[in-house]
Each structure stands twice: as structure tokens, then as C-alpha cells.
Length: 81
Image (tube, rainbow, N blue to C red; front, top):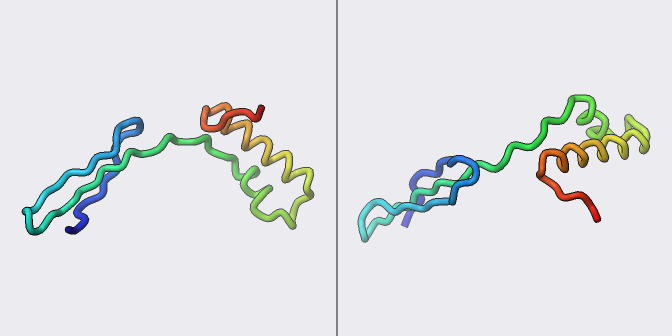
């Protein structure tokens, strides 16, 4: 048994495995759906947490909270509660 191709399917579709080859030489081909696209973070947000030594903890905490708010607004994260 060998793996043939792996392709990316459309979001919200099922994963799919198809069999090709022969009974003695099975080849499995996989289709894996693409995940949802999350929000894009600004360069400033990424820079603020990429090097915490270069920024104060208040800036890092504020930036992380903004990123979490963006994920919640995009429906990719549930609010705490």
C-alpha cells in the first residue's frame, strides 16, 4: 500500500480517500479540505509580541487581547465565559 496524491479541497467539504492501483498494489489518494481563513494581523501586532523583550508587558497584553478579539469577531474563537 502506498500514498498517491494529497490535494487540498474546498472549505466545509468532507475529507476524501480514494483507492487506485491494483489489489496487490493499492494506492490511496487523499483530499483534505482547506480550513477557514482567519483574520490577518497587522505588522504592528505581530511585532509587538514577536520580541517581548523589546516591549513592555502592558503593550504585549493589549496586543494579545486585540488578536483574541479579532479571532472572536471572525467566529474562530468563542468568548470566555
